[in-house]
Image (cartoon, rainbow, N blue to C red; front, side):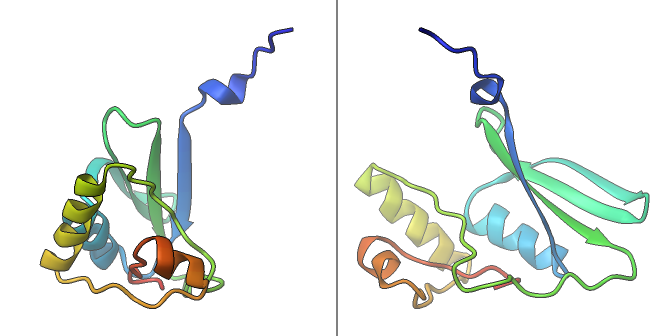
Amino acid sequence: MAFDLPLAKAHLRIARPTDHLPEILRFYCDGLGFQVLNSFQDHDGFDGVMLGHPVAPYHLEFTRQHGQVAGPAPSKENLLVFYLPDPLVWQQSIARMEQAGFEAVKSHNQYWDRRGKTFADADG
């Protein structure tokens, strides 16, 4: 029996507040190669930006609320994980992060140090 799952066809947006919007843009655009898809200023007291790749079924939204502090990431396991199965693409992505001035950090979960690289954005 086939199921029609509306969420299977949804576009995923991961939204997160930040106190460091300019630094976040540099990390995700210069380091990870994301593009600014849209942005807004003073929309009901919020500034924000949507980052992604035009053909990807997901994007990231970072917001800053005027007069409020977002604070750092809630835990060391608060991760966005990008799987890049092609070893050459993975190596090129690591090189782009390093060329943009970002250094890998030791991961809280040792699995990520064995199987990949962890980079911390301005929010931790």
